Amino acid sequence: MSSGSDRQTAKHYRTQTGVIREIPSAVAVQMRRLERTDREDTTRDVPFAERLRQIPRETGRFLAIVAGGAPAGHWVEVGTSGGYSALWLGMACLQRGAQLTTIENDAAKLARANETVRAAELTSCVEVRAGDAREVVGSIRPISLIFIDCISEAYCEVLDAALPNMPPGAILLADNATSHSDELEDFVRRLADDDEIDWVVVPVGKGVFYGRKRFA
Image (cartoon, rainbow, N blue to C red; front, side, top):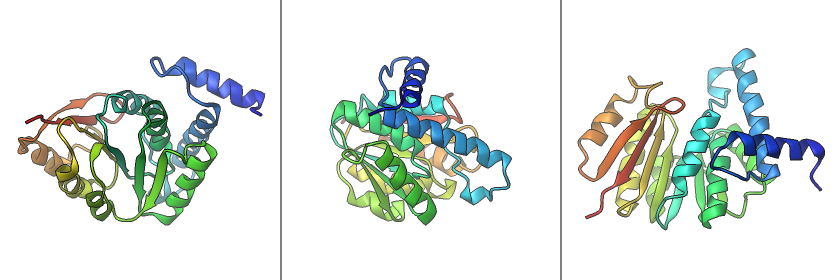
């Protein structure tokens, strides 16, 4: 049975999400927990590599809305951290009947993400997978949506691994377009030189690359 606190949390998220009208209580509770931890990481003496460094809430809403329009196929997230963005994508999975594989290679964050997905009751549609995404992504097909939010140096390699498995109309999303623009110069150049992808930078959160694989 849901507690009064859980119901209040769900109500809060319903009023904050606009077109996302219903967030399950279990998901809302985990969102709030991770948001609190992320804030605390920046005020405590937590080593940078151990911080969650997750997307802001407005980016999560954007991901969920965009994912709802993805074509049939598998969804992939690269860089799970504590599982916050996987919660937003997982809700879209529930609405669409889709499956998300989220990939993380940090053992501590992997354990946290698994607990987040379990507590949010999303294990039926979200798989947390360990490994180097540059190797894992190439084994998943078809990829109808991919969200990249990992170390900047890996963006190009992840895209190169995913693109052959993405059908026409597949969606590309990548975070930190404006906050890490210097580090992502090679990725921007890679996108600009690719005739298969139409893309734009959306000014939400830290900036999101939003692209779609062209139809033949």
